[in-house]
Picture (spheres, rainbow, N blue to C red):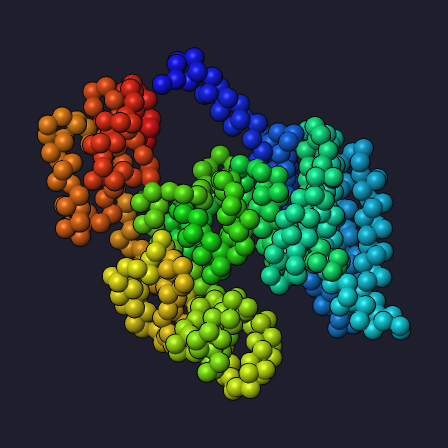
Length: 530
């Protein structure tokens, strides 16, 4: 048994470790959209960052949309191309001149050089009529480059020594479809770029592929960039600062009655990202699978409001349900999509859902051509049909027959082609032969979550009566449907207590209280319960 002094030393060491743990903060485009937004971000960094932390940024506001528009106008040889480039340049100049003093001339000069490069990239030359397509990634990367450069300069002027890092100088992925990171090479190259006693601002969204060409990680890929950085530097915390204060039971912009999910299990969060949740990039959690980093989603517009925590939680978090959807999908049906060939196709083409017995997979539209070519090599016929999906997502939700029955009832007024469960069993997915509308999402969300109220029970008194009550409680909770959402969260005696917001297994509660309860004052206990 350790002495009191040894225990105090361990506590002190743990506190120091927590105090100096690396934290990655990612700021999305909406958080950096205007002068006012950037000022808020600077204040958040002042209050939440240390010099050994990392800041990952998206492009300011709608900059990426503007660059995509410029790219398309160049392909179409639009007469509005020059005006679009000039408008983008003016918007960046306004941010620089308003937010900076001593560094403004330097950044204006660099911006002008970038604009000249942009103009060269969007002009087809007589010797290379595919100049524009070749430079697509270069064009789209400018937004993150400008954003990181600007924020780093602001921090250096006002807050602390700072430098910006272009992710293309260290981050290597296999290609811009799968975006699998070369961890060893990326970590080696990143370590060379790091500077001591300065706050690093890193570009999100952009990288290089295995061939050494610039590429992107897909729209909203800066979240993925943040967790990649966290895995490379061994960060213990990642905060995604965005324009919403967490993850909801549905997109709150479409479903006004959507409820914020305060805690979300890792597997459920990954499935939500895969199936189109607007807050989570599909690959965001992938780099953290082998790391103990804790993910937090918070609002840069209201930083004092608690957001959503993603991690390993107990029964209450596992009981939550979410509704999500995706439009613009394709269902492919072929005899070659059964059995082992079907399993290959599911993996190779990142199927949204599938049934290898029925011989179909649902994929995004941009994978249709590649799948068609793959099936042609098998010399089999295939049919492609536009579809959408709507899904119920929750911890091992596919194992619960009552939830599946409820889902079918919620869809009774809508035509469905198939209802399948995901391989990880965290979702039930309905394939629709038409676009999924906001009305459909609202109605299904209402039917699936109308009874989702979680009631936390604290048992005061664990003597003879309390112990007997605990013996009876598990059977009662199992037998009575009305107690489905009742969770034991605390036990308290006159001197000791144990509280868990994740819920306490009622079958082991008394033994847990005997082993792990702690002395607590009444005032502290009230605060903990609240």
